[in-house]
Image 1 (cartoon, rainbow, N blue to C red):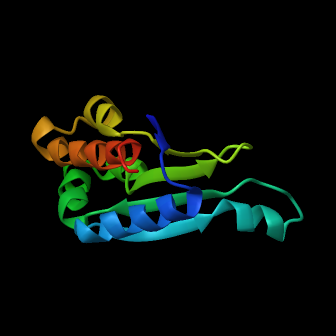
Image 2: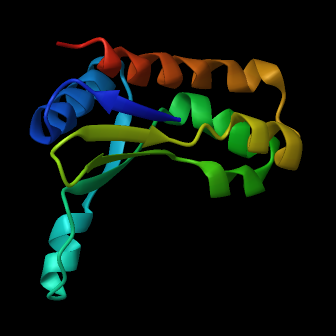
Length: 125
């Protein structure tokens, strides 16, 4: 799922972090890929990967099947195009959790809120 943000990169990044925290989600990591590339003398447009989740929701999934931890925490990448447009990309792990790890729909239902949260960025002006 790829969503074009109506905000610039910096505002998208800051707002997403705020929205995650406001919804009680834990931000486990904020990886600045551009800075990592620069550290090795390479150039990369602004790119950040956020790892986030809610241990109260993820733990039952991992208790059901410990291998499901390979899909958690959730991840979103915020990146900027050469002409300055900002995108958020999210790979919803629901299907993999259902098919590959036999996680039931009741445990997966809360993941749908993430999709809705990210879709809000296309409406922000």
